[in-house]
Image 1 (cartoon, rainbow, N blue to C red):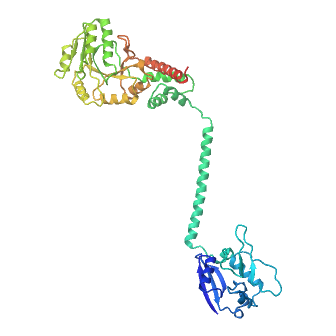
Image 2 (cartoon, rainbow, N blue to C red; image 1 turned 60 degrees about the vertical axis):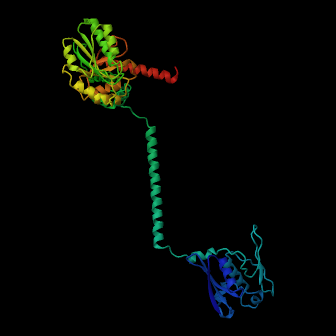
Length: 449
């Protein structure tokens, strides 16, 4: 008796391979699934039942013809049933035996979705399902690398669960905090009130730090008073007096401020001791507005060109009580501004240099202008366009942070009325009034009332 071994990916292919190689004269002795996943079948050729131990009764049935199977009386009916069950993976049919029959042919009930398969004792053409009962006995122990990988996967899953739990706790804490009512401290309340004026955080913190807050209405009054004391102011007995140059970017109100001051002085003291000087020769007919003021006020007007010197003109009118110098308005990034600043640096020491800052500009714009013109020794500033601004806090914050004294405030176009020497408490009152008016106007525009 000869033995042969066949391997295939599944049982059906293995049976076909046996049939093609040996034919129907093969008897399956054993079958098992390898660790590689393949199916291994051992068959016997020239099978001799007497040479096989009775324990092999569970082996697969022979693949011979009906005649040869009928000649094998030692193979019982039950053994054939067990062999069919082992190979097909399904319970074998057990039709009632009839006396004298060899039971070589039996019929297996097919599923409802497929055609019933009538076969001989073992039909290699019928689909054979995998015997899953064999797998637990044939699977090998996982390799060390696989065990490490499974352990790592388990640890990662635990870490993921911990992270999800921590995130859920954080979200719960955040929801609890947001739901809890926030208690406003006196400092928080004062900060909100001062912020409505447009003041910078730096100025607000400085004001709040210097006060002993009680949480009552008197905190607001104390803060406004302290804010007024923080504004640098430069005035004297007669503010409209001396030799003054007005500088700044275009459109900030330099020429208009000069006309207002000159008109007030003429109305009070006459036109004999007032002179107007302009250095603006960069724009076409830039000095015509100043000449118009001169004709109306009956005061002389001098133009300092590139061929003349500012100091010579100042020396010429040194006996005048009020000398007002108008300069060219330029962008802080204009290259011609360097020549303008250089001329002011060479000017006589008694020339006071005032920077005109419009309250309509943003705080960062005002700081940039101050930084550029601080190349010369500024004596103070003029806050202009108070009437056009929605908030005075930006300009007030800049003069406090830069330590630039305020000399005049201008709040309109009327000549000579809309300019006056700066007073800190008046400026703060105007800031509060502007914030209230703007808030009401904004509310009416927003809600259509």
